[in-house]
Image (cartoon, rainbow, N blue to C red):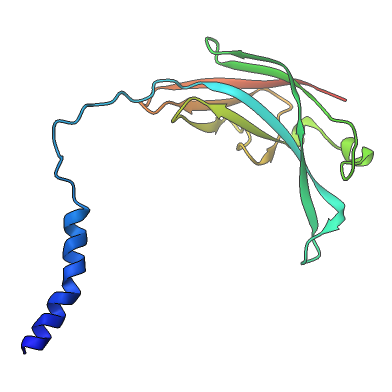
Amino acid sequence: MKNRFMKRTASLLPLWLAACLLTSCLTAGLEELPAFEEAEITDVNFEYRYKDPGSVWIDGEQTVKWINLPVQNRVIDSGAGTVTCTLQVPAADGAFTEAIRGQVALNSLAGKFYLSAAARIEPLEGAPTLGAPGDFSAPRKYKVTAANGTSKTWTVHVTALNR
């Protein structure tokens, strides 16, 4: 009986120690830190994704590659909540052939936006989900919400795709 009690106690001891060590004694008197208030888009980038006919996965599918499109004439107006820019299609090179370059269009781009610290973003009115190919041929609206809950609606407009 004594042996059984010792085994049970020995097996529960690590759990008891973990419970004691992982609990905090400090429960009051903590300084309230302000939540971030900014709901800003600070930068934008776009990429075009394409299947590389010269590269095939093990399952027989073509490899998906991407090319970053340099952003030019970028104007970020925080007061108006607007971003306007033009994009440059890079020269053909390697897997990014002239034929693939000719397929680059505003209706098949993946957007990547940089936001204020701790902010989140959601597409509005049919705007593309960021990170997935979508249509940027018309101005697109996004709602940026700051950590403290304030939000701002932004309009992103890609005015031209230069070749």
